[in-house]
Image 1: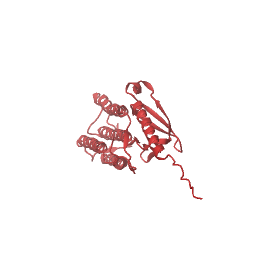
Image 2: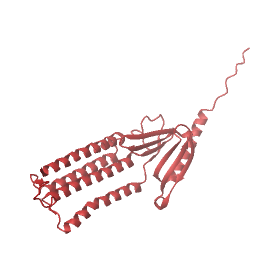
Image 3: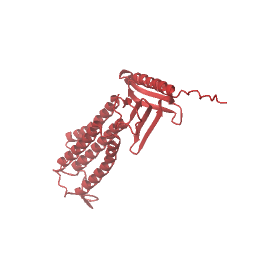
Image 4: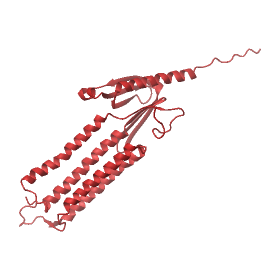
Length: 84
Length: 192
């Protein structure tokens, strides 16, 4: 049985969506109750910039990995799945 | 005196804000320091395993480490944002008419309580520990009459000044409404 690396990328993207949903609730509360103050706007902008930086760094490091590679599981000839 | 517009909902005629209080900034600093500590953990871990050249950065191990670190950083960043949000949305407002206690407890739970100034019965300041003493912040407990038994101003700066301001506001409120609510003697009918 083999799993392509892109499967793990798919799990990562699903996690991103979950985090985005939770963050959108927070941003909704901040917009609704923050009364459009400078502090609340700054907080939202900083959070979004930080999140985008983390995601950008992730894809920057991922660009060297070929996602079409496969991970072989339960293969008698495989030595170590983690390549350690 | 702060502008009341957009600061509180349904302001009363002639009402103005005396105090608009958030928690002390040291509470935020502690949250930021915790985040920074958590942020260094993956870096230390990756450095340790990289020194042993145990990671194939173009293989499965590299993929898992990159994706795992990314999810870890996104969650800790979200937690920090949540903490900052909590700090920002926890507000205590004292006006010339009432005290308003606004607390964002979690994502879907928000408590808003208000009380007329004349319902304030007792005010207590609690400052525990070295940090609260050195940075002059603490909790203020306001005993009230009615359904909401007491308000708690949590980790607020200069609690003594706040307490003095509240007591002055209460005094002015009582003077104002006692003088206007003084009952006039009923007119006597002398007609026979």
